[in-house]
Image (tube, rainbow, N blue to C red; front, side, top):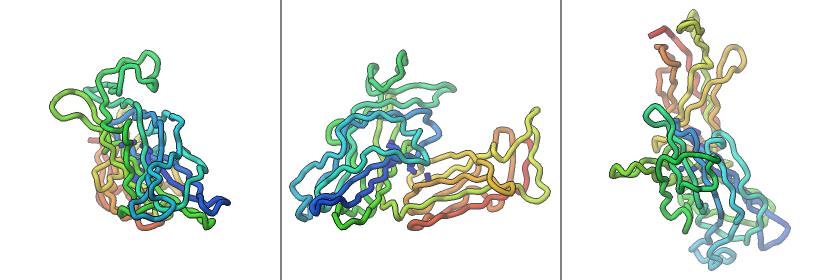
Length: 316
């Protein structure tokens, strides 16, 4: 698929990419962290302030990481809307030297944020405080956004298969994809309080082993799209939806490709099996081959493809 996707998603932060590259010193390596995110269709904005990014040393006793506690990668606050990172990536840390060795955790300290969500036919804002600096001037806050421990110990990134990340000085490069899934990371608090809570779902994997799902859509022979009202329905009005194993959904509109084929390409995906659905515009009934939803399996460093063909389409 696309993951606070893609810190795909793919809270995929929009999700991040961690690049570990060697530098000239035998005892240090260079670290770059990129963010990418998997949004949910309930959210209009998911803004956070990241005040610190750091690595924690391994517990295996390897020299170079053990005993260091925290290795700070960034201490200058940055405020970003995670949804703008969907199917993309942005630098959060670039070329920071760190001691060589194994690291068991990457953590983000988040000191504030807000979400703007679709509710009751309108739009509402839930913020960590009414005077959070990331709010647009004059914004009316409708409720509280609670971020347990995010501003203290920070949000932990769980690396693929619980493996440590090794920083070396051998001249190679290591890239890690961090998937911060917005749709899985924000939700309503239990008990009817009306507030929202951030409980981040963050995963990591080697970027070399991430992949993508390309979804295509075309008209079958003799199939014509209906006219709804005075508007001709187009294939660009259809939406591909990628659903990960945790239930996080990422919609993407189709864009025109070659030879009448429309494309939605979900990038920066962790390996695994995803559900791929096809959603039509309001007022349209349709069938497809294959039927929808279907599945796509992303392998290490590979592209999976799903080719939908509309076999019928009519006005409801």
